Amino acid sequence: MDTEISPVELLPKSEKVDPVTSTRQMMTIIKEKQFDEERALYHLQHTDVVDCVFAGPADGESVLKEARDVNLKNCSFSLRYPLWHVRGFRLDSCTMDEKTRAAIWYADKGYIHNSRLGGIKALRECTQISISGSSVESQEFGWKCHGVTMEDCDLTAEYVFFDSSDVALNNVRMKGKYSFQYMENLTIRDSVLDTKDAFWHSKNVTVENSVLKGEYLAWFSEGLTLINCHISGTQPLCYCKDLKLINCTMEGTDLSFEYSDVEADIRGNILSVKNPRSGEITADSVGEIIMTDDTVMDCTGTVKIR
Image (tube, rainbow, N blue to C red):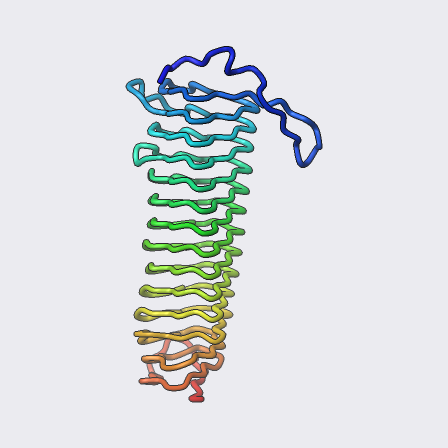
């Protein structure tokens, strides 16, 4: 592909109506080009970028930094930091390989669809980002973000969504460690999470119709509600405040609920329950109820066999 942009291809080719202001904006088109220089399309505005490649020997950084109102379709990326400080963007059917490190930082109002994000730290300190029908394989994904939604996605990451807020996941298949820690206002529905140490120190989290696999689930969380969930793994749900489980099942969950304030309705068996601080845990059966004399706080929680 040619690395220059023809003046003809920068002429207005389409018109878009702003849904907020109802003003009409002429869009230019860049098509079938290759870029590898640093800041090659810096502060690009009101442009459709189609079938372009962002890669090459110059290995330039920040190719679309400070862009405004850009739509990228069928593009591939293999350069660092391509979308920093971008306002109003759309990625549709795009790929970012493992060399596309720290791809989208400090961005606002973005939509990512049918795309693959493959570089480490792909999303950080962003607001109002919607991701759908996409595959994400990115360590430390989604740190310190606000207003992110993911739907119909595959997500592989360690330390995912650390210290983020107002996040919603629907039909997400997630695999990784240390997920959703120090989060606030998170909802997850119809998802499968294969993780460990999830939801530590989180606040106001609701998970519904989902599978939660992994050790040490949600220690030190506050305001966690699990509805119609299947939970598996050792020592879950300890040191929790305002914990609620509604119509859930548990598997291999020994030493559950230690020092937690909990109201739980469990269908089936709990392997063992140890020293719940307060509340009531109801189940069909419990393998072992452990109430010791050496607790470091008063433990008045009860276990009821249905």
